[in-house]
Length: 190
Image 1 (cartoon, one colour):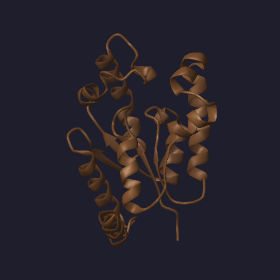
Image 2 (cartoon, one colour):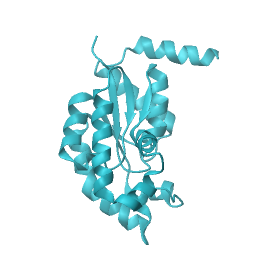
Image 3 (tube, rainbow, N blue to C red):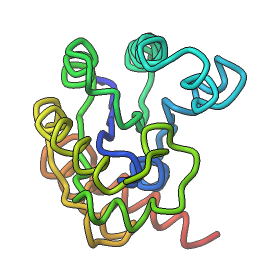
């Protein structure tokens, strides 16, 4: 049987890690967060690395880690960093090695979620909403280019987003509805 790799892409704060963790639990596969893998590798925070080494060095490291994760054997749900789609090679790898779900949010929704966040390097600016609009304008076409499915994540709860993702994956024949039902049933008995 072929591997099931699901990758979540989208803007910073779009819910990739939160939705990814729950989605992985629902279908009974491991969850991997590329930012967490990068932090394990560098032995510190992405923000500190970003400040010390610069964005180019970070994007190079991110590309290496992403390639390794996508080529690792076994099933998984992968949450990617918000800027992982900036490189052509990353978009090609994602699209060819995983089923890519784009969790799409508006800059205004993201701002509401992130206005007190101090950990995201690209948002440590005087006008974070303007920065989010700029990033969204730049990245939305790139997310769309590598995504197999676009899920509007502006308003739905995490639970609703996970269900939307499951429905897409079931309709595509990638996830067996019985497997999901068995996992959900097992969780309820705990």
